[in-house]
Length: 272
Image 1 (tube, one colour):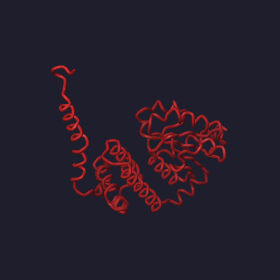
Image 2: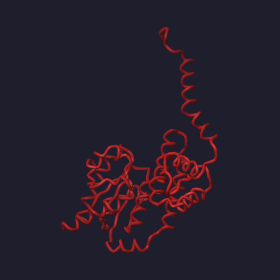
Image 3: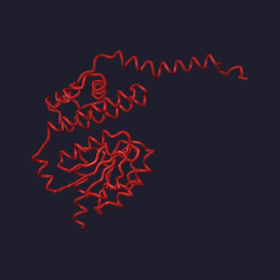
Image 4: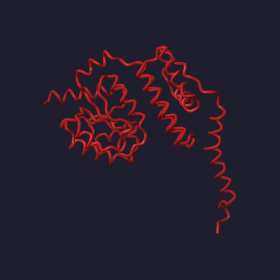
């Protein structure tokens, strides 16, 4: 029997209702009644792309037609914003923001999936328009190959798609990608030569499986000096994971990942 000061069933129901209104209903109403999403107006000589730009672009991706996000990116590029800044400071944070909206139940799975699909389309189309064949051709003389894979069990793979684009722009031959989720990494590296194998990690519950996967890759790889690279925001928060999984390097910024990988591959080559 409840004591004299214990809350009644009615009190508990009222508290749950207040919590639902505060954490679910009000945020949804605020999103629904905000103005139409706009394209960030940042220019080359203006402030850097920031949190507000990411929020507006996320709303554009979620609410507008298929071409609106691409048109927005083309506008930014025409104003002089570097493509690397668009990729790293707008598209990648927008993907993370969509994940946060999902975690907070402000977007459902279908909306987030659609938004990520639009982001991937923007990434592909922008890269295709801004391809650098001369620079890529020179880099390909090195015949560098990288295999990019999600960590076993990983679902968030937009960062992997972006990493692939940065490596392609640097002239690397890129294999794998998010569509290889579930593929046996050891089998892949045992059938073809790769200089680098990169994994994306977004959930700490996948760390042990990734460590086992990397050990199997090293054992099966046709390249006895294969370089293992890992990426993902989780590693920035817990850098000790890099050593725990047995990786050679952590790429915190996709823009610098190709150069970082090249340095280690070249170092291994000089030691042979």
